[in-house]
Image 1 (cartoon, rainbow, N blue to C red):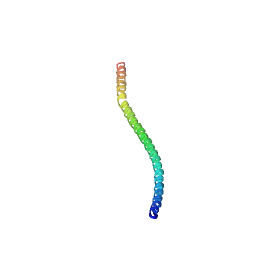
Image 2 (image 1 turned 60 degrees about the vertical axis):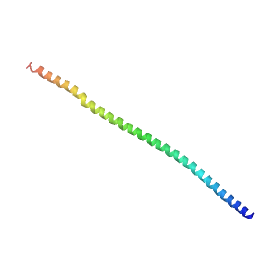
Image 3 (image 1 turned 120 degrees about the vertical axis):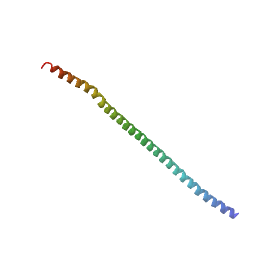
Image 4 (image 1 turned 30 degrees about the vertical axis):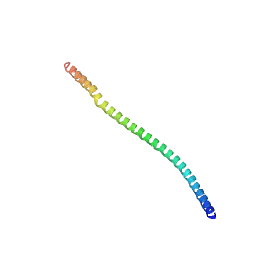
Amino acid sequence: MLNNFDKVLERDGKLAELEQRSDQLLDMSSAFSKTTKTLAQKKRWENIRCRIYLGLVVAGALLIILIVLLVIFLPQSSGDSGASQAQDAGTASRPGD
């Protein structure tokens, strides 16, 4: 009988210790959950920022390409008409000499 009573007391001590450990694990899991949510939100914003920067770089590159193409092709067509006007003006003044 005394042996059974000792086992009950021992079991009670182990159960109390187990309950303490489970409470600690519960607290740690809550802290872990908060940390993971915070980290996930931080990574999400970093991803959004990265996509915005990438979009700005692509838009800037396209804008630069468009400007280069406009500079290359537009002055040639207006430059040719200016050169032909200069030639016409030069030939018009010669017969008057």
